Image 1 (cartoon, rainbow, N blue to C red):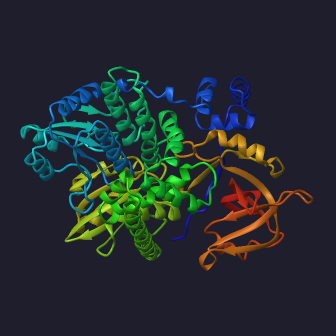
Image 2: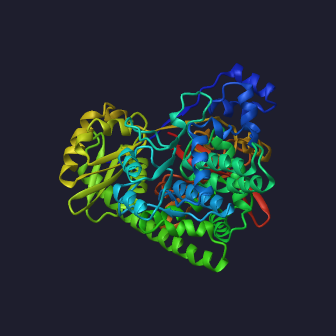
Length: 581
C-alpha cells in the first residue's frame, strides 16, 4: 500500500466581501482574503482578529457554576480544609494543575495534588483514587482537564463526605456527574460562550474568579492582576499544545501568553524556551511552532513513558540547578520516546504493506505486545499522514489491548466507535482522536466491525490540501511577510497561510540534506530574468533523481525568513509538490 497523492484545492472566498473587509478593517486585500478563508464573516470580526486584546476575554462569571466553585474553594481555604487538585498527564492537564497550584501558593494555602499515571489507572479518576483521597482526609477535590464523565467516582466521593469541583473542557457524557460545581463551557446553552477553550483556559477562568474574591472586587488588585498576567504563559502553553482552535479567546490567550512565556523568570520555563528557540533557530518572538514542537513534546514525553510529575516540578522549579536536573529527565525521556516511536512506526508500515488491502480496507486496526502504549497516539497520527486511513493501534499486555486512534476527514471517530461500544471495556474520545481498552482477542472483531460501519469508500480516502491562493513569486517580499504576520499566532483553524505557484523552473543543482538524504533543497524561478527562491522540501529526498536542473515543478508552500550571518532571505517551505508533465 502506497501513500495517496493529494488533491489540491483553493479556498473559495467572496470577492465583494473581501474588498469590503479590506476597506473597513484597514488591511490589505491579501490579508482580507486570508481572513475570509479562516471563517471571518464581517469587518468587525476582522478588526477583533487583527487586534486582539485581553479585554476581549469573556467574563469568567459567564461560565456555568463558576461562582459556586469559587465559593466552595474559598470556604475550604477559609476553614483550612484539606484540598487536592487532580489533573492529567498531558501538557494541558499539567499546565492546568500548575496554574492552580501557583494560585494556592500565592494565597499561602497548602494543597495536595495528583497527576494520573498512564500505566496505572490511565486517564481520569477511578474509584480506588477516590477512596485514597477520602482516607487522606481530603474534603475538597478539584479536577482540572478531566471529570466530566466521572459520574460513578464523583457519586462515591459524595458518599465518603468529599466534595468535588470539576473544571473541564471535554464534552460531557450523557450520564452527567453531579459534583458541587461543574465548570465546563459545553454545559452552557448560550451562543456567547466560547466552547473550544482548552482545559487550562477553563482553569484560567476559575483562577480569575478566585482572584476577584481575594481582591474583594471585580477589578483585580495589583498583586492578583500581575499574577493573572504571568499566568497567561501557562494558559498559552496548554492551549497551543492541546491543538484547540486558535480563534476567539484561545487566540487571545495564545498571543499574549506567548509573550509571558518568553519572558518568564522561572528557571524551568526559561530552559524549555531556550531549547525550543535553539531547535527552530529563531531569534524573534516565541511562536506556536516553538511550543508545539519544542516544548510540548518534552513535557508530554514523561507522561507517555514515566511520571508526568517531573514536568510539573520543572514548570514550578525556582532553583536553577534543580531545573537543569529535571530538564535532563525530560530530555532523556523525549529522546527515548522518539526512538520508540520510530521503531513502532516502521513496524506498523511494514505490516500495512504486507497485510492491508487499500481497495477494501477502510480502517487500519493492529495490535502488538511489543508496542509501547505511551507513544501509540503519535504513531497513529504519522500513519494517518502517510496512508490517509483511520488508524487504531493497540499495545497488548496480559490479554488486554489498550490503544489510541486517529481519524481522517469524513470519519467521525468517536461516533463510529460508539456504535460498536459493546466490544470495548472502555472507550472515549472526539471526532478526530480517541482511545479505548478491550480484550486482545477482540481486535480482529473490532477491525471487521469498523470496516463495516465506516461509510466512506476507500477510493474516496484521498487527502485534500486547501491552499489560500496562487502567488506570483515576484509578489513575495518582506512587506508581504509582515502583512501575513498579522494573522499570528498560527494553529488549529488558523493555519499558517499556504500558497501555490505553478510551473516553476528549477535552477541550479538540487541538494540532498539531512540523515540519509531524506530532505531536498533547490532553487526555483517563475520566469527567466526574475529572482530565484530557495525551496526546502522535508522528507522528499526520494525525489532527488526526478528534481533536476530545468525541471518544471508546481509547489504548495509556506514562507519563512532565514537569517544567516547577517543576511535575511525568504525561503519556500514546501508542503507538497508536483512534477509538471
